[in-house]
Length: 145
Picture 1 (cartoon, rainbow, N blue to C red):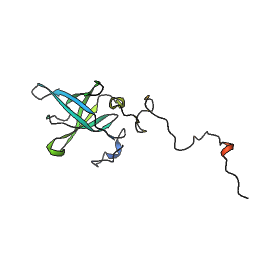
Picture 2: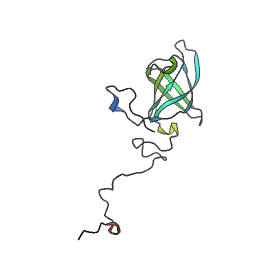
Picture 3: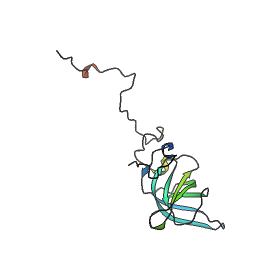
Picture 4: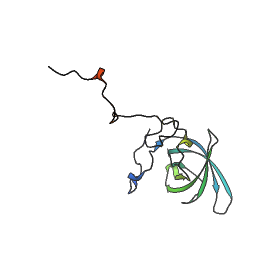
């Protein structure tokens, strides 16, 4: 399921990939300002090929590096905090961005059309015939008399 822009702003039409509402269990790890490590278990709210929106109780700051571990697959991905906003029940919503685009990290079965078509999960779909396609004579309309 894709989502409308939840926070309209000047950058709303500059998304690099479609956002998808998807709750993926994560293990988020990083270092606090004092250098001590932290680990928090949470879930995504929204994902895309370039990162996610997560709820995170741990105090983080924009530009902070984090490691996300997909609890279902064990796969890890490095990311950076790029956005923070007040979330429900006082838990901040934190936007994170991968160091490199990785749409496969979320294991979305049917990625939106603007995710990489080179992905093995990507399905080819065309809503209109190819400009080079030849008409099928068996299905040609019969002229009215």
